[in-house]
Length: 173
Image 1 (cartoon, rainbow, N blue to C red):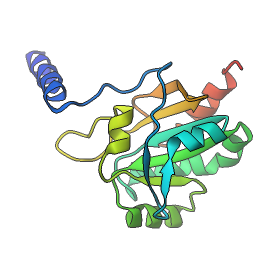
Image 2 (tube, one colour; image 1 turned 30 degrees about the horizontal axis):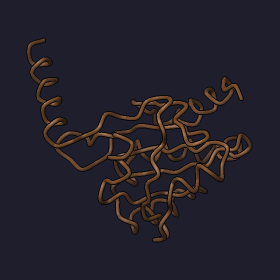
Image 3 (cartoon, rainbow, N blue to C red; image 1 turned 180 degrees about the vertical axis):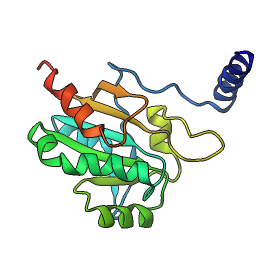
């Protein structure tokens, strides 16, 4: 118990010292941040928010790993259902453009992956690194009309799409 308190205090001090932001909460404005896609082009998330009814921005640690593959495949397999609901899916990790391109091709993802090598997107959403790495924690944010309408701070792997579809079923327009 004492170690947990010390660990929590250490994380708090580190976040204060290094300027880590708290993750976005429901009701907050979604960040208008840009990053390179798996194709090497720049994508501004504000443009996606404006063009889609919903935008799911999900963060994962590393392209090609088992949990990240399960998370992406969950969204791939439910992609038709998600798009019928007006959802654009954007995956984000700190992998390079080339790693993202390869991951997308291998898994046949129909959605865009962002190469957040400078952690600009992670920082804008307040997504923390996995301790002692530059890897993103697994989190997901659903955006509507430029505002966060749902967050999952411990995003699932194989159930990510089911979680989002359940939330969409309960959304009131």
